[in-house]
Image 1 (cartoon, rainbow, N blue to C red):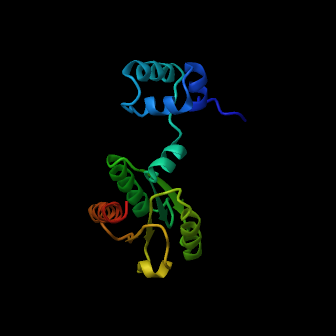
Image 2: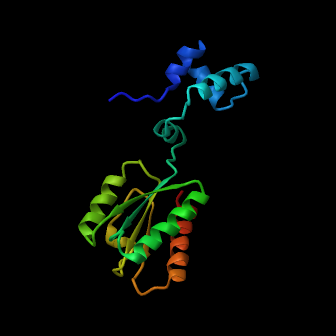
Image 3: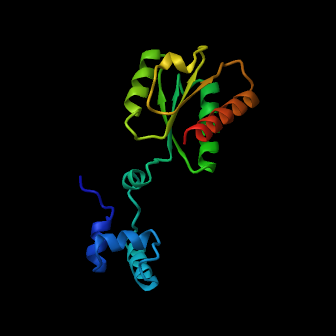
Length: 173
């Protein structure tokens, strides 16, 4: 199936400017005249251009994505964790991608290994077991551990979730 999203290459063709000029214009580079920037942005808007997040993250070396591994999303305490993490992350310009381990330590390790490919900026692993980061080995990806149990109050869950996200972003991202 072919994508209908317009690319910088297509904008280059439509505008008559080089790919480099189109890229610079879309990024408000001052070495491109204001008139040229406006022309290119107008064409981009007409064609509903959306920057390719993968290309942007390669250039910026930051994806603005955080993975959250939870034991089971249908358990109330973990759905609250996800809710609070997502709200807090969005306020700071990050998006959350979540994975379910179904209480499997092996699944957690496999997710961590596969997510260490640069596709995300960090991982928050939520567990009810009293684990420490050392239990997950030496990973190349920034990681935070969030211990949550079903008998914690909603306020405790909210506070612990925010603390975990803040630690991850302040320490690593």
